[in-house]
Length: 331
Image (cartoon, rainbow, N blue to C red; front, side, top):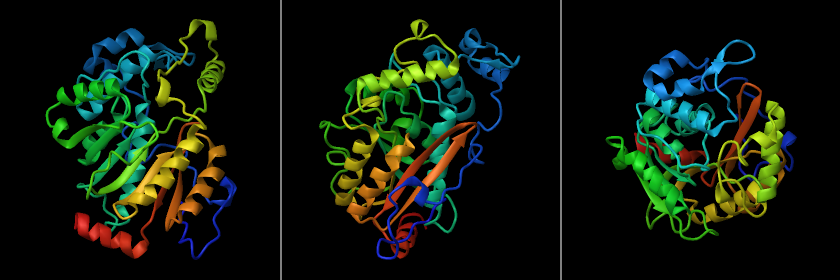
């Protein structure tokens, strides 16, 4: 984990190689999905998964991860078996997230919060999920793993309606997770964070493509890597539509707006964070952080097998203020 000091004491990096990173070769130690999927157990929990399980080229039980229906069935089984969440589903073409990677983000966020809590993960954290989507995956996992309270925002009323249906199907989740509609596509925190409201951390999986054609090209690259024929696959193999996948300027522009807007809430959140899909976006993100005059930021690398990902976290509070935040909020 990178520890970059105050803007008054260091030169901001301008390219990814300027930040020392620790590449994790496996999922977080607390991640429940570090080993192989136990398909017999998952099928016993959710029998519908059986229709999608077959032997892969190595003779191991697996699914076709380029098939959205198969990934949805696997997610339902994992959520029920590992987290006690029933009734999870999403409408066709909405983003279907890989649960192990999403859980990793939350576990590393927990470590980040623990720094202000004498090394212990706080159970009383309050979290804002920007773009929670129809799947609501971060609030669901974060509430079950750590007992955190969540607000999930989105600009799509249909997505929020589906997420609310999942909450209503599980006792206690509606009390722990609140969903809010963002009525302006140009705003991120404004209109969602209410007067006097405080969050311990925010998270986001931003739209990473710059256009719909970019999204299609990315899907075609996935097909090629998976040895699949584009003609036999849906337009977007893992689902996702519109604002879930792309925005003008892609993730770099979106995160730049997020950083700029976060300065208006500098004293009302301990850490702001976002996933960064493309390492090429990092220099622009670092420039935006410098412009916002943040006190500290981290680039935290994650990995699942050969797939690498990362998130950037930033704060407007110095080390003493972060410790005081932890004492006031959790001790």
